[in-house]
Length: 356
Image 1 (cartoon, rainbow, N blue to C red):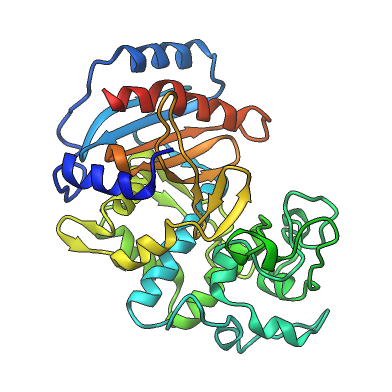
Image 2: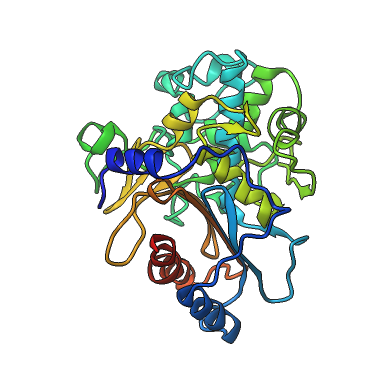
């Protein structure tokens, strides 16, 4: 794997500074690997792919839609939109509504307190604990026996109350956080992501969707989307909101450009760097930032990458060393091979094509 430092240096010296992606200019490239990939997707080797977009050096070099979708289609990438909570939190910090991601959550949830399983240790939960899927509460979407499993949350009207009422977790089969990489115990749980919107909305004093539109969507000219909400009326940052593929590409391109868009600092460089650096170890070879997955892609050469990801193999990827962003959307929900399909597209076709 190339080191992060090498990635940054290579990206800086090999590529021009980019203000945004110009979608009005077609820069599609002819590449045998991408042509082969396109044929195999059309033939159904990779099931239910709905779009693949690739940008490099700020130019859209590949854009194809499949399975009765088009440029106008709004894609539900499920948990891929958890990362919207990362943008939301960063904007609230940048504008002074939240002091830091290190802040405790309950000063922003003064209207709530744990009713079930009260424990003074809960007072120490931070916003960063939620962003990194590593709070002390017993919530795990990978374990159907978990009290905080998302399927239990969906039947409760108040998702944040559901979360803060969970008991403190124990570590009978795993090392505790102090013995884990980065000092955190990663446990993927939508309940952690869902709580962020209410925390931020309380801090900013206005609806989160309005705040996002003013400070993120409007600067990026994202206008066609469908937001989902919790039963209590908060923006659903657990996932599910729907955007066009080009708009997903804008979001990851914003990260590649360290928060700048059209010569404006939309989100601070400091926040982007925090969000995209490892904060917890999800599993062997895969780390986690702030609702972003971190691991390398490639065939013979592996390149460090970070990405939004959701059920079905949906991935919106940044590869800094190649100055590239990639969007792959699918409707391959709950297929055990779904992420293997999109990983193979990245490793065997997209990354090797970008190297040339």
